[in-house]
Amino acid sequence: MEIIKTEIEGLLIIKPRVFEDARGYFFESFSQRDFEKEVGKVTFVQDNESMSSYGVIRGLHFQRPPYTQSKLVRCVSGSVLDVAVDIRKGSPTYGRHVAIELSGQNHLQFFIPHGFAHGFSVLTETAVFQYKCDHFYAPQADDGISILDQSLGIDWHIPIEQAILSEKDTRHQLLKDFDSPFYYTE
Image (cartoon, rainbow, N blue to C red; front, side):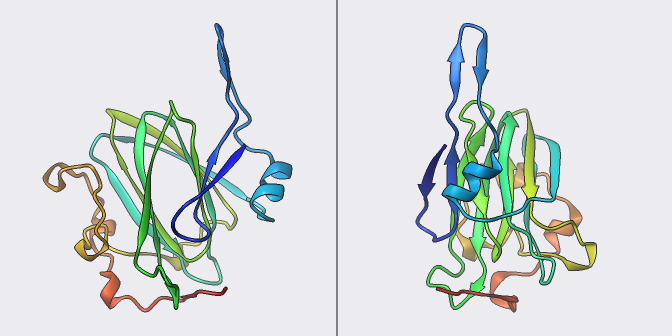
């Protein structure tokens, strides 16, 4: 695997080695040994999968301490624009985001550590999205930042009038009203 650093410390793009021939392709989508060697010690405990249609925007989600989650995300079919927003108090990149297209074609993965809000928009007719988490889902710790917060400057690549949003995701607070429980450490 190749690790590609982003402009925000901690957010990493993972490009697997893909072997293609006349039969199709093969790649290791995850190796604990290689991940620990290249990224660090993270023990994933839960795998999730969603299927969504064009125009769906999910996010920007996170779990509050002590149930914080690091995520390793990928799109196995279709295409999504995946976004992580830095919500760590004291971070030099607080409020900034990284957006990357993940698809069944490019096989890229995105590692999102604790202290980031995460979301994605579906760019194709349908998309199947998978992600690993290092903590179990805890509904009492579920929280988010509004995907409609214009101060974040996120271009979801979906016209907002065509976006399909959950009621829950439209009720999240704006970043300016958010008191983050996460802190930046060097």
